[in-house]
Image 1 (tube, rainbow, N blue to C red):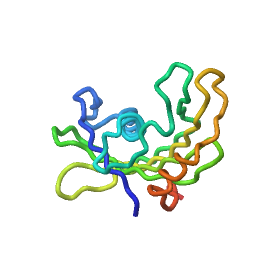
Image 2 (cartoon, rainbow, N blue to C red):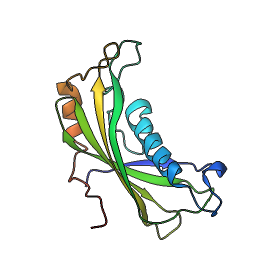
Image 3 (cartoon, one colour):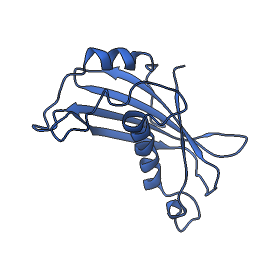
Image 4 (cartoon, rainbow, N blue to C red):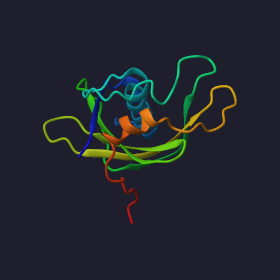
Length: 154
């Protein structure tokens, strides 16, 4: 499988009154992993995806989240050990892409704590209207495309 690995440091404030990571933090972890992948290029693998789906200029293309669904499978307790998120890409539309993710627990017996499907749309930075994915972005993304992630407990 074509997986991209992102290491994330937990924050003490991620914990809630039940002494485990709050569900809102899971959404932040997936967001941070996407930022490291598409904006910073700060992943274990050299993907070449940074700057292909967004532009730093004020009127350049932007990537916005159109939808996101998370299945929470297991609680995470606070640890100074980094968490790992594995990402891969799915369907590439005209201006959109599906980003799949699995967040893992700490320790030697890492288990999937949550799964996420995010649909992101590339938009023009001025009009905020969808902008077609470039051939260069499609070619780079195809190297990291794999089977869709199915969510739901049914």
